[in-house]
Length: 359
Image (cartoon, rainbow, N blue to C red; front, side, top):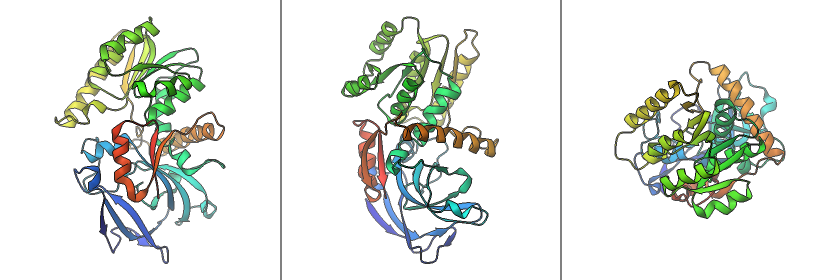
């Protein structure tokens, strides 16, 4: 990883005596080794904001897509990646309760999490329950919000139903299968055979992802009447077969297009083609539903409602983690300055759970 010094903060004001912020910069379309380390004065929070000393951030599919310029809505290069974080409030701006200082909190950021400090809107912070470590909490921030929203808000699963989870060994998948099992739902999980023993231990019936036709045949053996919901992060032909595996009244929830990661074609046409297909399926008179799940849905239309829903859902997930219902699946932890190695490991798809950066 390269190192780049920046002597002056480009935004905000500096906290007197607060020292230096170290952050990881994604400068453009680079390999993981092209990430930069940048240092700048630590900014002070403005009105309604809080300065968070970051304890953990994660490497997710989003950062992997952004590195390739293949994540919808990503900012222009250069920028600091980091979709979510957990940390301790170090200072607050005007209008924010001073009692928040010293509280461990979790937050979704979309970008900016790969840093030692982050200035965030105070009303977007969710307290982490006592006894839950920063790295453990980090595994269920964006992954937990995504899994909870897809399972309970979009698919509205019920006890006794059967669901199919693609990428059952991934960051979202490992949380999703636990939430589903806690809800009394039968889970068929798609993953590499090297993860099957761990899935069985979690109460999941594993299926190999390597051969799509064999996958479909095996799921039909396990659920002859079809599954009640499919959670698909692959796209392409997989999402078509996922639709065909639904039982009457079932729900297909697409939430990523992992199959396009190495596609040379422009991303937006592929994304809009997927949305068009899902929209068409959703209006067919067969009782099945389909849609794309975006964890940020509703933020622009109703920011206050979005933040209230986010706080409610994340508090629920963190509560389950504190109660021992959920187990944090940490694939590996790396120092912040070793983000290149962390990204390489995450992109290898050889580990189960989430790769975490610890500043």
